[in-house]
Length: 424
Image (cartoon, rainbow, N blue to C red):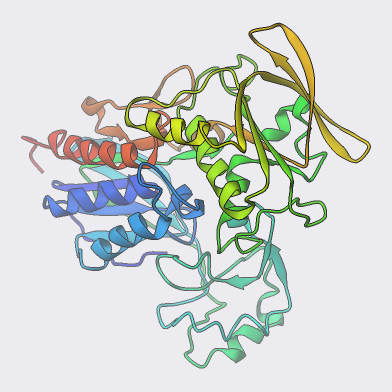
């Protein structure tokens, strides 16, 4: 759904595929430099993975920090045109004159929505909440999350009973719900295209030796972000999913699938810091809990080394060299078989809650784009200014939030440069 009507501008314009922190930053920087910018986002809201975090580096900011700054800049920037629930279906042309076909799926809620919540209680249908990785549910009509942009409800077309129900329509006193909306398409003409499609958490069910999906108390690092979040499924309480008890021992398993030729052969660069950060979540919520982090090695370069030192000195945190070979359940408790990579021994470690530090996989690997871009052997995109196709943020390689924002600025500049000197 288009939040602003697009303008028929070619030269001096950019289309950004992806509305996460990188995509928003590219569009805003380009617009403030004088370009028209279109953000194409497949979900109902901007914000991407950052909106799912509890805090992010380097300042341990909550998402409201970086997202609200960008949202405010978007609200006052008339050159940025936001298209949520949209996807690119076709791309033709060359730098300075691309023709992009965009499909807009219906939101079923128009701009009269005040996010008053009156439509929710009457709705009889529930759906899994993908923002919480399925650990909670919402009604078929829902607000994507507390900081959603646009701040407007949306209806899950797959869950909704449609006009045969219409209870939400009757409950809305603003006439904001329109169940007759249909999928539409339009063609945009732009001068450059930036791919900022971000990343997906690696599918932990493929790590069969680590038993994710077989035991509720084995979760991923992104699931931990939601558990620790005040807006998450447990309102910030860190508990064992199986029975709701507070864990006494929490084990973090580093390189869960990463640096492994059978899964992700590369280092995602942020997993060590994520686990150290999440160890502080546990320490704050559960002061008596014991935390063990098993890693091949810890990678905290530059200014992040001080944070590593601080966490390592915590008497309730143990950072150990070890590769977790297997996780199973013994007498109702999780048992990890850990190989000491220095001493060549196997030890059994028991835990109440296990967190798998799964890595970053580029979204374009699972969801290919409808046009060709250069990719490396790990399926991260490669910028090719000559073609006018620019790759930014985690679509290019694993990045933290601050590095993604910096890279977005560079991508905006490249979008300008690849159009320079070309006639309309």
